[in-house]
Length: 193
Image 1 (cartoon, rainbow, N blue to C red):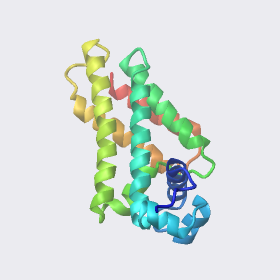
Image 2 (tube, helix red, strand yellow):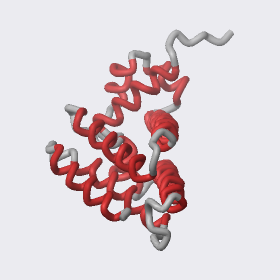
Image 3 (cartoon, rainbow, N blue to C red):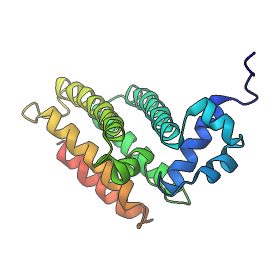
């Protein structure tokens, strides 16, 4: 007869996201996972597989949360530029409010593992694609309304905006000055004119 789990898998996965986000894949030991997740080593292996499988599940969880947050945010603003500014402001506020200055979990995964791990690379690429597609939708709407010039390539702008966000997510690890990030946002918005 199978044992029932005495823990919430989603809550454990959320704690795994936090642990891996804080220390990275290589910096997080199995013992740190057991201690931080509050489950036994055997429960961890039985439910999630090994450390690597848990890491991939944590990245997938983060990707899903990021995607749903992105959809909500991009649908709220009245104009394309306001929507983009709101997203950039939210990113900076979130980054600067994190005392540990962890940056972005997905960007960190990309820097740490994506160059030699195809599964991590795929998750990072899919997450970047989500953001790019959201930006393209916003830019297309802005071009239809005359806010953004139709001569501008929506995909190229989306990639520029995506890269701007990644740059800020890395910069926050060494810079904690809101004015620095506000300058980047102001300059980024000028590209849309």
